[in-house]
Length: 198
Image (cartoon, rainbow, N blue to C red; front, side, top):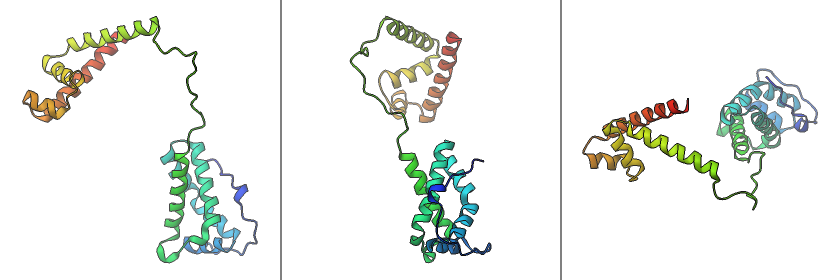
């Protein structure tokens, strides 16, 4: 487990000593008074769970570490906003964590998207046109090999743009049957297209 670096937010005020049996709420109230030991104890109790939550929600270890670090920086800055009569200390801390994780998730990824340049071709070249033709031929060939009932459902959906409910009405079959035929047809086509690819 990577250690979170909190040097930039570590408290510099005097420590008052911490009762290891203190509740989370009591620790947050002590942090609000500038107690570094209480902050350290909160960090000891919550660093792993907050990091784990961030990793589950963000799916990226580096971004999760950033969100966890921001959580504890926010705890240090805003501990005065904690009100024990409104909920437990752990609930307050996880709310702070959730907000930090959401903020991190909303941030754009590092790679900016550049606008296309004039040099980029707008029209497909001969190689792209040949590939598109080959793909279209494979799809049509696979479609022709489907059983009539399955092919009919796909044709109505993809070429006529009908919803599954509309197909059900037009073919006078139950909606579940349309869904089953669609799923079966797509599965068969995928297998047939994979045969050609392989």
